[in-house]
Amino acid sequence: MINTRFFVGLDDTDAPDMMCTTWLGTLLADLLEKSGMKVLSARLVRLNPTIPYKTRGNAAISLCIIGDPDHAFRLTCDLVERFSALSCDNTNPGIVVSIKKPPSAFYWKAVRSLCHIDEAKSLLAGCAIHFRGYKLGRGLIGATAAVSSDFPDHTWEYLAYRQINRLHVPREVDAESLRCSEELTWPHTWDTWDYDLDGPVCIPHTPDPVLFGIRGDSPFMVARAVSVIRSEQADMARIWMTNQGTDAHLVFCDHGMMQEGISYLVRGIVKEIPVTGKGGHVLFHLTRAGLIIPCMAFEPTKKFRDIVRALRPGDEILAAGSYLKNTLNLEKIFVFSAEPFVSIRAPLCQTCQKRMTSAGSGKGYKCRRCSARATDPEEIKEARTISPGWYEVPSGARRHLSRPCARGYVNPDPSYLPVSRERRSGHFTEKKN
Ligand code: ATP
Image 1: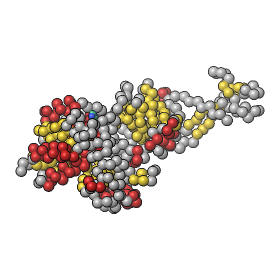
Image 2 (image 1 turned 180 degrees about the vertical axis):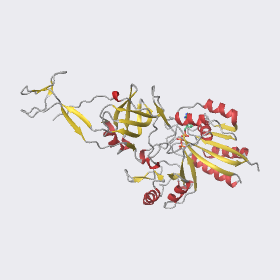
Image 3 (image 1 turned 90 degrees about the horizontal axis):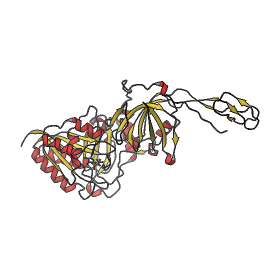
Image 4 (image 1 turned 30 degrees about the vertical axis):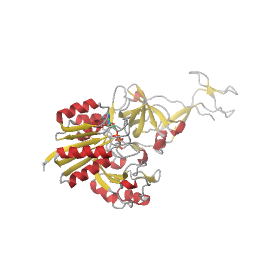
């Protein structure tokens, strides 16, 4: 038996209606252990959430093993050929076996930006002992990123998998036990139960082999949460170390144009009162260094939209989200200041008790009925419903990579330069009586 420490990376084995790369990774790890090898760690690595080729959550896996890399490569190829969804047009598996870790810069590029297969192949040519791409071989990007991953911060996920002969029947997981599991272990576990929707979020809606996934801050805590869950018998389970819940995808934007498909943290000033559009999406604009950035809280973010609706012009915030179709899709915001908001409107005519209208630029106001005049507008002081702090989308709408507030409220880095106050825009609202 050869005793070498090496890494296996795997990605792009599934289709929307079947399989899951973590299931194949768990099967592989179990078989390697049965053959006498030692699995030192198992990583579930989430990559850029905006990648169009993804099936679901853009996940790849890597295993760190002590044993025989040639045997592990043969076994991985065998499993991929037997179980991956090769008949699906969008499934292009990639396998990497390497003793040396490729530079972590590749992982950071894959989690924050766009990579090309040739970049992965040229890195692998210099460091991998085996690699194989099936069909387009696009999975080599995720497999290389997983092997090169560097986790300055990490969390854990316990994934339980279904028996293969039950995939066609609905999952049996006792909802009440899931709620209890979160109550028992929160804030050390999160995203098991969505209190806004009053339902579980840890069970997939797709016909893949995952029974449930419990996320938390230690292997001990996720196992403790699982110990109270009542469900159908799981076939396999593994606790993955992961970059989920770490904000690894966010890039701080302090100048220049924002690029499509990148997820940003941007500090700016709210330009106008947010408006709710068709479908319940809430839109406002953020101003930052001459840029005007449309920010959207989509309907699935539910009660988070009430927070966004409570923003007022002049509020200084840090907004996190992916920039897609020229709009920042909000995941969370940090409110630096929510000062009393005063809006102005045309005054009431004291005689007619009707609202006056503008008499023209710089000419004050005029009553259209009795021609009475006034110079000053009426000021309306609005009580604020939000105060400084972080606000996040509910569990059910959270991106895998987004850091949940349950992990602690991290104050924004002081190096995030404050925005000059002069950029605050003026505001005027004319309310009809
Ligand atoms: P699941 O989460 O169920 O495993 P998935 O959502 O991870 O599925 P995949 O089937 O793995 O989706 O497809 C994602 C594809 O995108 C893979 O081929 C992966 O190599 C590739 N990919 C991932 N990140 C990037 C990136 N930053 N640039 C280019 N390609 C990427």
